[in-house]
Image (cartoon, rainbow, N blue to C red; front, side, top):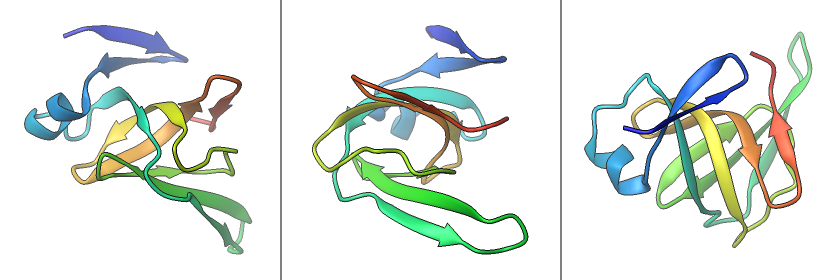
Length: 103
């Protein structure tokens, strides 16, 4: 398995099929794919106001704590933790911008 270092962590570089077929639940992974739908941006007005963006890549749900400027049809690279049905993203990389959440 190939890995890459991003920030303070190492991430397994996987294809969507490897992620779906492998035993990577709870592991840090990086995938590349095309945003399938319009990202949904939610405002969460709790104690610490924040935003959450949700979209899908090949049926995998991607959640990101923030408001990345990505749209349907755009190719993105997602770094995060695989939780079984999706990825909790720590970073989203586009051709133009790198969005990162705090760890």
